Image (cartoon, one colour):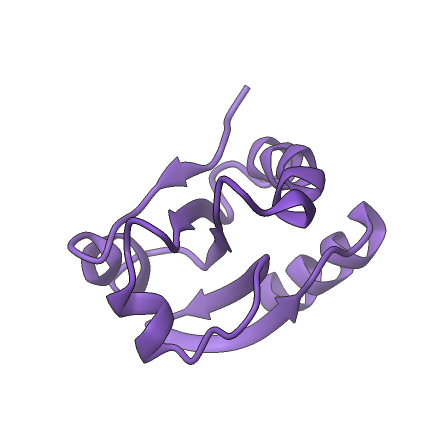
Length: 108
């Protein structure tokens, strides 16, 4: 089963912006309870959309440059990138059905 891979400030450009397929990135932190709540749903989406959507996570405590450049104010924040551009964003915990709907829109 596929789970979300970790990205860092150093790998963000190559892993996310230069990705051949759309990317969903989860900005999270170890101390964030809502992040823990949505983590299983993120991993489920990683498996469900394997090959169509790259699913990655970034720990905001270990990587401060990228979240700061992207203007992330609260976590969890999910951002969707397509062809190097941010095309959608979700802030906070959402249901699996809501997340699936956004992913399908991004992929559509």
